[in-house]
Structures are given as C-alpha cells and as structure tokens.
Image (cartoon, rainbow, N blue to C red):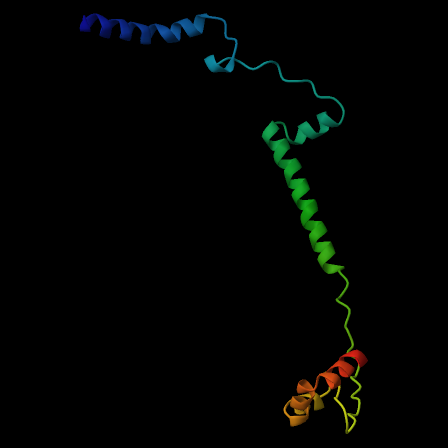
Length: 135
C-alpha cells in the first residue's frame, strides 16, 4: 500500500502543471494573466508616461508631499520672528522708613527679618493685623 500511495503522489505532481496549462486561467492564484493595459487619457496619460507602474506613481506622490513639507519647515524656520526682547525696568528702591516694615522686595527687608523688631512684630497681634491690612 505504501508503494501505491507514493506512485499516486508522484503522478499527481507530474499531472498538476499539465492540468493548469490546459485549464482556463482566471486568477492570479493560478498564475493567471493580467488584463489589457488601461488606456490613459488627459493628465493621467502624461503622468503615466513618466511613471508607468503603480508603485512608481505612489512613490512620486509621497515624495512630492514630503518635499513640500520640508520646504514649508525650512521657510518657516527662516522667516520666523525673533523672540521679543523684554527690557527690564529699573527697580525703584523705596527708602525704608526708620520706623515700620520695609517692602518685601527691598534689600533692607532681609536685614529687618534678622532683627529683634521682626520678632516683636510677630508676637504683637495688633501690629501684625494693621500691617496685613495696610498691605
């Protein structure tokens, strides 16, 4: 039985190409043929003159979009407006009164925080309330 199965398999392998050659070819799965080339008209005829295959045309379209994008980026990088320069206004340093609390942004405030007057201000609630209300 093994001999018969081997012979039948060999016969099928030899006969398969002959059957495909003599049968009607309908699709690409059996190695079928393509239809007639399309007749291009108008702009398609001009474009297909340069790019006859579909993959060539798709590559040309993608290249055109990529090139346009790169040119746009280069143009926008060259014509971008420079960042506006922010001019710093000179800070007005208010003279600290001899009595009272200097402004927080003044350099004298650091010295005031280190003194006993600041500790007394924090301990006296009335002075602290008036200071916070005036600010």
